[in-house]
Amino acid sequence: MKQVEERYISLLTDFGFKRIFGSAPNKDLLICFLNSLFNGRQVVKDVKYLNPENVGDIYTDRKAIFDVYCEGENGEKFIVEMQNAYQTYFKDRALFYSTFPVREQAPKGSEWDFKLNHVYTIALLNFNMNEEAFNKEEIRHHVQLCDTATHKIFYDKLEFIYVEIAKFNKSLDELETLYDKWLYALKNLYKLTQRPKALCDKVFDRLFEEAEIAKFTPQEQREYEASKMAYRDIKNSIDTAKREGKEEGLAEGMKKGMEKRNLEIARKMLANGMNAATVMEITGLSESQLQQLKG
Image (cartoon, rainbow, N blue to C red; front, top):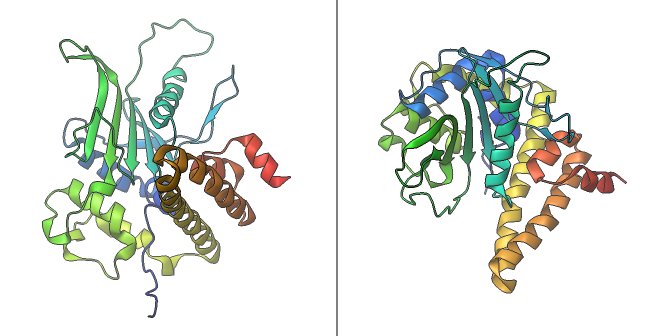
């Protein structure tokens, strides 16, 4: 059977996601997506992209590398991440990452009253999180600090929004809102051979223009192929880990299988010229583990 050549990139890949949502020329796409996600509760009029790899801790030398990191017109910070596989201590990682845009708001060498701007962490999950605190029937989960007795919001400037796009199964005919259309595009863009009527809103003109692989330079095509290979390896590693998990206990099997496959994925990514920071972000490996592979 002849394999159909992809016309559009996959937004599930690191390259595809950052091309569409992480570049200044395409900021209107990010703004549109964010507004569809907030659905009027927060209105984003403009964003300024910040360096996603230049956020560090002077005390521990730990760095956070975000897929997309930007600032709204009122100083609010947005971290937007695409996550294709569950990682150990995933919630801890999300909380840790959120502390960087909080701490960087402190001015240097001057008095400060500790007033902070809003920080949003938005995680798009290409897997089922299976979180006990979440309603299993819902796809979008909104987390804030609240009083456990009254359930009233205690602090409203730190928000986590988890979107389990793996659960989104609407067909083109079932798409009703702009949010529905974005989730469909996130999950299915690479499967399309032509632009469907359901995605003919003017805002998607730019999406389909930027996502068409035929318009890529040779370098962009190489980068996309490397990113696509890394994505496929990650998904294969999950399947492998699940099979091994059935034989020796799901949790332990998943852990061993993922560790083994992550090392293999990292080796391939480095061989294809991907930088160490991106490899660590995608695989979850430490710098010392990467150094061992290089050695």
